[in-house]
Amino acid sequence: MDSTVKIVSIHIVAAIVAAIISTVFTTGMIGFTNHVFAFAIGIVILYFVGQFCQKAFEGEIEGFSAWLWDGILPFGFCWFILWTIITNYI
Image (cartoon, rainbow, N blue to C red):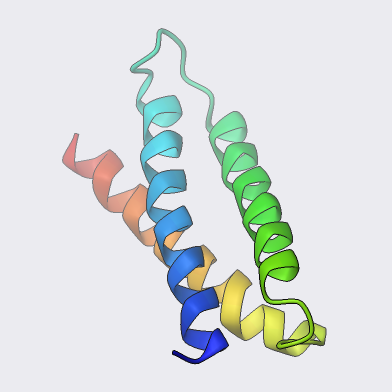
């Protein structure tokens, strides 16, 4: 499989996890509501997933443009859309 597909897949799975965690903090399931902390959790998850992919696929993908289209944007779109859907559903 192409490294681009692997990187996008890893970021999409991480975005689903980030959306669920962000929803927990947004809806107050753990006793308090904090939208800023929910957003920060997603950014932190994105950073660590990006670092993991950079180490795992070292040399196969380079440049900010490739990381933007293969990692950051798929993560962001999936994370925000799922966060909104799950929050409104619950």
